[in-house]
Amino acid sequence: MIEAAGDRLEVSGPLTLGSAKQMLEAGCTQLGSREQVIFDLAKVHEVDSSGLTVIFGWVRAARRLGKPVRISNPPQNLLSLARLYGVTELLPLA
Image (tube, rainbow, N blue to C red; front, side, top):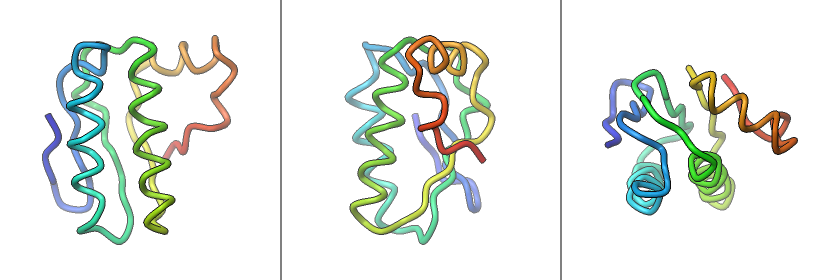
């Protein structure tokens, strides 16, 4: 689930294969109404490699709209997966 909370979009629940499509669509829907986007992942409790796909999908969608996007409070296992796949430098961490 993604909820607007001030200047942030709070993401909660899993970022896994089972929720990837829903989370990607929910995040992209929120992009249009914001000048800049900060996805706060503090409430994400489970991540697999699909979570990286979702995040990169949000980044691509925001760039198409000309909006900066940042990721705050990434779970440690997300960072570990990013290191494993060699994409850490592509994550727009806040």
